[in-house]
Length: 167
Image (cartoon, rainbow, N blue to C red; front, side):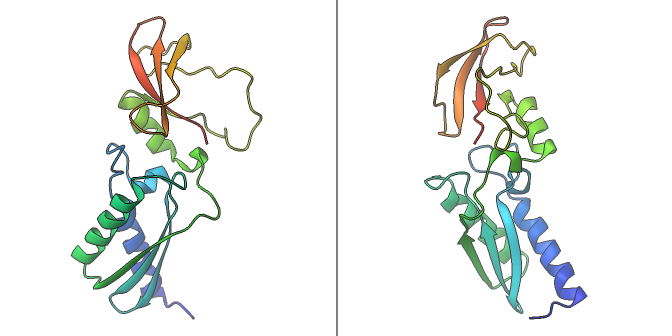
């Protein structure tokens, strides 16, 4: 199927709209910044298919993400919206944009290290406190408010914080 420039521009706009949806568990970042919206295709006039890759296979937020994408695209004239769960290639924390990492840190959540999914695995993980910047932090719990995050505490400023785990 050949895509015309007009269809391509519409797909770009629909991808932008789908990506603008806030993550239900991390509402300070969008699905585009999280890197989970993988593709948007026009199937027919007013019919679109969106590829969505969850952060992990059992992610409980994927249904809310799908519903929110469907709503925003319906609100912008798409009568038929299909959100497909795509598991290949798998999502990794390297898919989070620089802006998404900045917003996580600004919200008090230590972002994952960039390049962690494909680089060497460190023997120790130095996590920077999003409050004071110290790397003298300790793990309190491997899981926090979501399975994607761990609960840590800064030894320097004593403040607890979430750390978005590297995947």
